[in-house]
Amino acid sequence: MTHLRALPAVGPGEDLATVMRRSTRAHTFAELASLSSARKARTAIARGEVVRLLPDAYVSAAHQDSFAARADAALLWAGPTAMLSGPAAMYLWGFLDEPPSTIDLLLPHPMHHQTPPWLRVRRVTWSPPLSRVNGMTVVGPAHAVVLGYGFLAARDRATAVHQAIRTRLVTPRSLIDTLGKVPRVRARRDLRQRLELALAGAESYLEEHGASKVFNTSEFARFVRQHRVRANGGRYRLDMFDPETLTAVELDGDASHSDPSQRQRDLRRDADLAQLGIQTIRISYRDLTTRPEWCRALVRGVLVARSAR
Image (cartoon, rainbow, N blue to C red; front, side, top):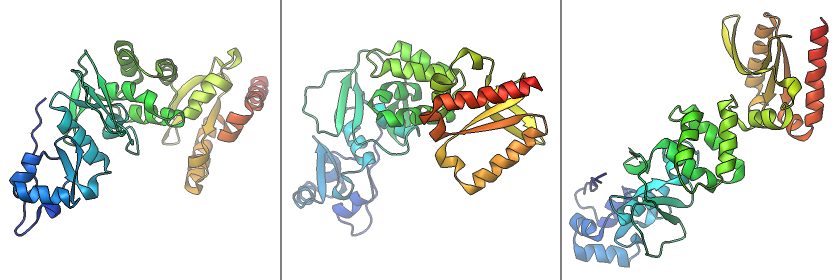
């Protein structure tokens, strides 16, 4: 994919340092010289107003720690066949809320140059799908997740995968298919298990935990996961639903359900469902993660009582 790199506009009387501060893009020395002159470019570099991040890839000193500047410098330095991958690509696709400190590049050819600590280069002999996001060449969304997942902290992996699925740029099935095609994937087994739970209906870490660690015994097999119902003009998604006893089990995360406005919505939802005869059992994050047997006993008792009716 060809890189068309537009130079920033130079205003009347602006020096090179000012021009560079108005852009987070990286530029070659020849491009710096075209914005002013070779002498002025060398002077700006000597003064520390413009810094070299990689060989022949310069950015404003003000932006040298920026993800955007470093990612663009990496692409400029590595050449037009390079592409952003891993957590960097996940961030550009909107699957991560914060940019990663390390930038991953995929290249179809070997690189023997030393790289700075913030850059990680992988040579590949296969061709992933490419896209342009924010002016940068990145691997496709499914490959971004598959190649980036294993580099994320364990506590962030579930959130990133489910955030990616919510964008509808990927699905659990497309991620599983991509995972099967990509060689050398970090944390492959862990990702595969997470995607299988997502395919079964889990839409958060809490729902994964409930399905795989708490309500994973045969007595709860009859529950329908992620069941959708209409009640009193509203549309609701039930984490777990038992049609036989008209019982819903909701797994409440600490963050969202501690908010007063969310609490009001939960009360309205439970009342609407009650009009259909559906009783809602709400289980907190703390209970689900610290006393799973108590959670099982609670739901089991409600099912027995409602079956007797």
